[in-house]
Amino acid sequence: MHSLQFTAESSSNGVRERDFTVGGVPGVLWSPASGADRAPLVLMGHGGGAHKKHAAMVGRAHLLVTDCGFHVAVIDAPGHGDRPRSAHDEREIAELRKAQAAGEPEAPIVVPYNARLAELAVPEYRATLDALQELPEIGADGPVGYVGIGLGMAIGVTLVAVEPRITAAVFGMMWPDALFEAAKQITVPIEFDLQWDNERIPREASLALFDAFAAKEKTLHANVGKHFEWPLFEVDSATRFLARHLGGAVTSPA
Image (cartoon, rainbow, N blue to C red; front, side, top):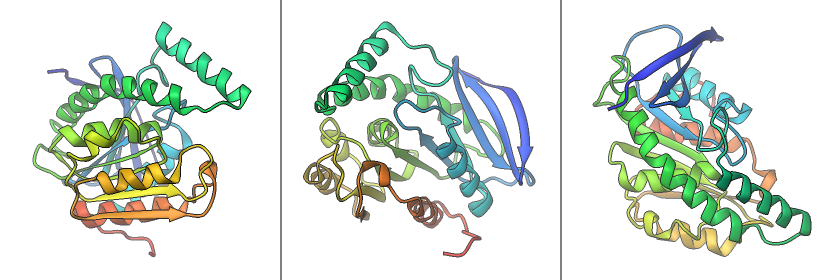
């Protein structure tokens, strides 16, 4: 079992931020700056081409900490952030840029590449969860949630399907082609986001994936707009969803 090693720490606006590594994989943990009581943990997955401290990760984490009192953690996906790219990463990224420049479909490249990243990342997330649950302020018996958009969804659907400690999840904005079998294994509550006019990910495919989730409680949030017009108010909705299922209390207005 890999141990967790903290490598840096800072605090601002009531949020304690600690960089860590688990088995050489870098991550960051955000926690309430005061209080040692146990609280739920939310794991996050960042988007493709992003990293653990992308603005979207930091903003969502601060909201979950300050509004719900949760701990929040994310690790760099393989080939992202502080992790070196492999030769395979470089080839796939070059092919993606070539397709984008030519106006060709991205899915034939992104879907298998992200599936490969998920295959590598899932055991890393499970090892990270093992290590974080050794911390007294988190513990092994507390509820765990997950949030992943884009690549974070590709990893998260695969992870939640095999990780019984995760009891609620928020997903969205990812080609579903490689995710149907995993979705059929997921029975925990799900909130699922899609853009109704997404020019990259077919609406019908996203709706079919939503239907495939085996969860008895699942909520579809469909907003008008294209892929990069995803509304930020969905972050607030996800916060309320996780508070409801993990036991936090949202302190900001609904």
